[in-house]
Amino acid sequence: MSVSAAVFDDLQSINPSAIIELYTLQLASALHYDPWEASKSYTVNNVVGHSGSNQAINFRCTVAGQSGTSEPSAFESATIGQTITDNQVTWTAQSVDIYRFHSGSNLNANGKIVWDGNDYLRFPILASGFAFQGGQLPRPKISISNATGLMTTLLLSMNQITAGNDLTGAILTRIRTLAKFIDAANFAPIGNNPPVNPFGTPDPTAEFPREIYGIDRKSIETRELVEFELAAPTDLAGVRIPKRQCTRKEFPSIGTFR
Image (tube, rainbow, N blue to C red; front, top):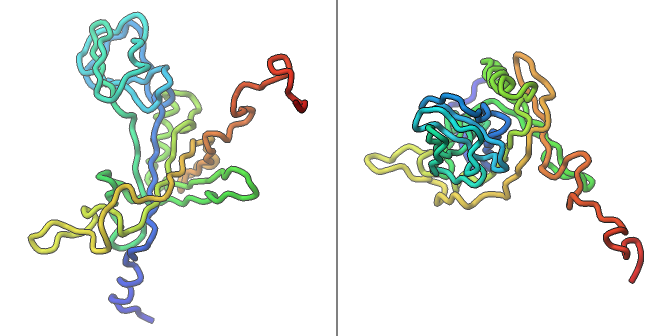
């Protein structure tokens, strides 16, 4: 039985209230980039990580030369675009690499989706396990196609920097919005007029609360797919919030009623 093209197109079209699911994968400076080294000759465009707490920033060499004998203290508090002198080298702070993707299968979403000015590329993925059950924090899983060997190549490059890392520590963010809020750039222009969103008014602030997880471990790697297990930032074995454990030595009233 054949299905008319009109019916097929209608089934595959985006509904204004359809949920658009997007993902970002953000690397970590200290884990996924070559570390800064003392008294080393750097060339322009070399990128290094750092040992500071702000793992969302790394540093690109913009003036070549030899680094100093200790990591610049300014790395810790640097902001994006800031330049830092390191002996003969000049570093410019920049964001770590962020991969943006979506798994849309609609005919008019086969390519990229533009959200808040950023391109999210279509990539075969399957994500599950985001629901809260029994008061427990969810531990989602995300499976990503490895048919082209792209994921294996990425993992190998990460493991050369931090042995056995397998992207552990990278931050995955799940973003959900409605089709009526996505950027007008997702739609074809009408005649000589610029493109518009036919479903509503683009609004980059109209989204569900973002769900942020860290990659806890790689659970499967085959030629077909790579699967990762995710964990919430607070879902860490042996870690308490607050981290300090109070005892009667510090607070004698603990365990009693006053």
